[in-house]
Length: 283
View 1: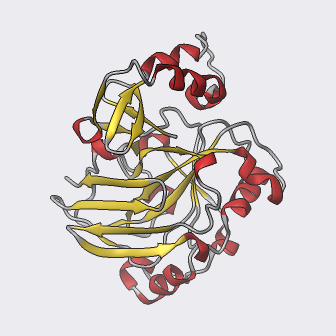
View 2: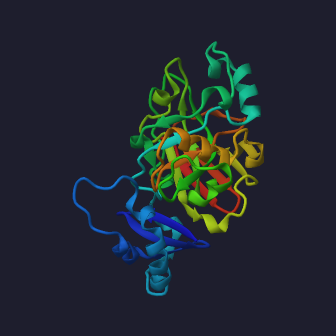
C-alpha cells in the first residue's frame, strides 16, 4: 500500500498514477490535548487506519497523483536519524574529493555512528529544495528511508524489521564545509521524504533495492542497498541502543558514490525499486 500526504494535509492512497482521497480514515486518529504523545499520530494508529483506507477507497475522490503537491508522508517524527559513510564507494570518493573532505580523514559508519537532522529540514517532493549558503557547494544524497512503526528500544538484529511501518525515498542534502554534519545537513528543505510511504508488507527485502538519482536527466547516483555497510536491520538495532525510537521516526540509511552539487533550476528525479519515483525542483 502506498500512502501519501498531499495538499492541505489530506491522506491519499496511490494506485499507479492515480490518487484516491482517503482522508476520512484519519478519523481513527484519537483527539489528544497537550502534551501530545511522542511520535507521529498517523503512524502510531496505522493498524486502525489501514482498514479504513480500504473501506473508503471506493468512495474517495480520484485524481492524477501528478496533479497534487506531495508533502512528506510523515508529518511529525520525533527525529530524523541519518547514517554517514555507509557505502564504501562513497567513502572512497569522499577521501579523494577535497570539496567533500575539507582536509579531514574520512572514516566509515563503524567510526562515526549515527547523527540527527533537524525536523525543521523535512519537506515533501512537491515542496522542493531551497538552496542556502549558495556561496558554498550544496550536494544531493539519495537514500532509502525507513519509517519506524512502533516504540523500539534495545531491538535485536533479527527482530529489527518488525518495527518498520514502511519505506520511502530520502534525500539527505548537504552543505559542504567545516562545521558538524548535523548542522550542515539540517537547513530548511534539506531532508526530502517521499513521494509516499510504501508499507513494509510490500518490500520483502529492503537490503536488495536498486535506486538511482538523476539531475536534469543525467545519472549521478546509481546503486543498490545490498552494498550498505550497516544493513537495514543493523541500523535499527544500533539506533535503538542509543535512542528510543517512536512511531514515525525516520532512518535515512546512507548514500552511495556520485554525490554532486546542486544549482537553482535543477530538477532531480529519484527512483527506488518497488517504492516508486519522485521529482524535486531546486530553487
